[in-house]
Length: 71
Image (cartoon, rainbow, N blue to C red; front, side):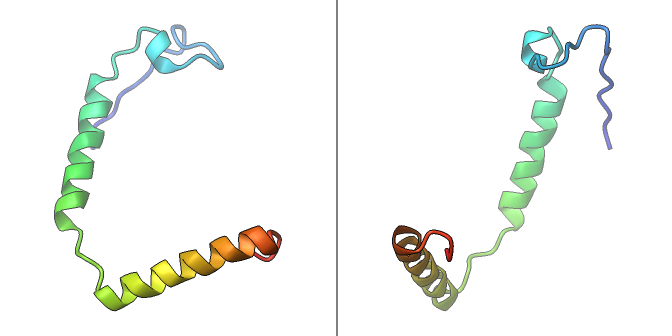
């Protein structure tokens, strides 16, 4: 596993890393590679499950409009 140590003298509290002149190319490349592995190993959901999830979303949207605390 790669490590990307930070020089805390360069990083300010509340300031994004890209503004602190920190090289993010390594972590960003690792993240992209990780997403590729996940994407390649993902399987398609069965159609029945997709239908159930769509129905659940539809019902929750209706509840959110009528009874937001219930949803």
